[in-house]
Image 1 (tube, helix red, strand yellow):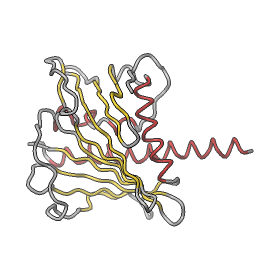
Image 2 (cartoon, one colour):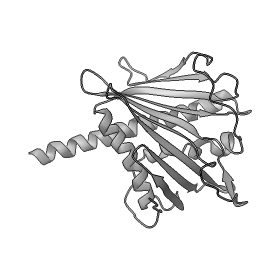
Image 3 (cartoon, helix red, strand yellow):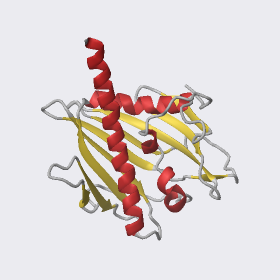
Image 4 (cartoon, one colour):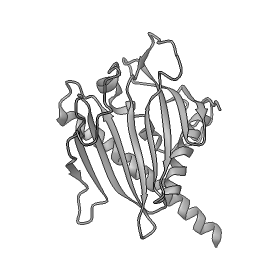
Length: 241
C-alpha cells in the first residue's frame, strides 16, 4: 500500500513528533551516523539509570538511560501509565502514521509515504522540513509489531534503507540510523504501562544538552498517547448517553 501526503488541513496529533526523532536531534546527532553495530546483547548493556522523574508526590513518568555495549550509542526510555488498554494505545499509534500519510502535515512533511504494509509491519519513506540553513532530512523506517500472550503489544522500528533503494540526494540530509520502540503492557486495573525508547549516537554533543531534548521528546510522546486515548474515552462516553 502506498500513500502520500497532500493537502489535508486537519490539525494533526502531536504524537507524530514521536515518529520522527529527527525533528529534535537529527542534524546534530544521527545524520551520517552510518550502520554501526548496535544490536548488542541485553546482558552486555549497562543497567538502566534513573535520570529524571516528574515533580510531585505521585509522578506520572520516569526517564532512564543506559549505554549500549560495544557501541557509541545511548538508549533512553520513559515509562508511565495510560488510562486505556494496550490495544487502544497500539491502534492510535498506527492511526497517527496513516493520518500523516493522508496529508495532515503538508508543511512539515512534504513527503510522507507508506511504501509497504502488512499485518505485522509497515515501512515509511519520509522527507521532513528543517529550519534554514539546514537541509531537509529523509528517512526510511520499518515498524514491526509484536503481540504477546500477556496482552502486551510492542512496536519496534529501525532504518530500512537496505530494503528499498533510494538514490541519495545532495539536497537532503539522510538519517542513516533511527531506532526505537513502544511497549504497551496491561495492568490488573485495566490501564496500560507505556514504555517508549530511542537509541542514537550523541557523537561529541555534551550530555547536558542532549539529555533534556531527548527526555522532552519521549515525555511528549507519552503525553500525546494519553491525550489521544482520553479523547477517545470521552467520545465513547458521550455517544452512549
